[in-house]
Every structure is written in C-alpha cells, then in structure tokens.
Length: 141
Image 1 (cartoon, rainbow, N blue to C red):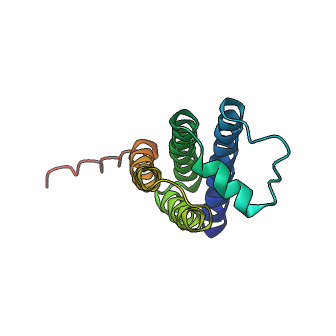
Image 2 (cartoon, helix red, strand yellow; image 1 turned 45 degrees about the horizontal axis):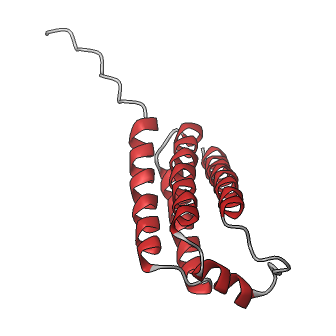
C-alpha cells in the first residue's frame, strides 16, 4: 500500500513537471529570452520574467493548471486514494512558494497559481476517485 502511494506521488510529479516544461517551452517560443542571456544568471532571469508580457504568462499558468490536474488525477488512479494527489499538490504548493520568492513574479500570477493548484487537485481527486460501492442489501429477518 505504501509503495503504491509513493509510486503514485512520483508519477504525479513526473506528469506535472513534463506538462509544465512543455508550457514553459511554448512560452519561450512566444517570448524568447534575449540573445546571449545565460540561464545561470539569476539577475538576468529575474529581469526576463519581470519583462514578460501577459500571453506567455497565461500559457505558463495554463500549463501548471493542466499539469496539476493530470498529475493529481494520475496519482489518485495509481494510488487508489486521493491522499497521493494531496501530497503532490502540497509539494507543488511548496515549490510555488519557493519559486515566487526566488524569482519575483506578479502577485496576480502567484495568487492564480495557488488557487489553480488547490482547485485542480480537488477536482481531479473527485473525478478520479471511484464512487463507493453500495453494500449488498441484507435480507429481511
């Protein structure tokens, strides 16, 4: 049971990371970094994010929403419980806080991100959790 749930959390995280990376690649296609910008220079990254227009920011936000939904859904299916999904979203929430501190982003983006994490996880957990089966009726005594 524990191994199944750990595997579910890992799978959920892999799904989220893969989808978020695809969205971020798309955002970089829409709004490419300046030529010669080093992705190892934190000040350059902060300036790049601060100058990013709305469309690529929305693409990243949508990628995180979809990634969170699909990752938590997969975690519920594999783990056969909503608990792995809630672990995945808790880890994402912690990562989102760290990201907002390390790379300043607009406050609307942070709020939307955290709301989308919670909403996507709750909806995915409800959709992926099978309905309880009814107990067989007892014959009258």
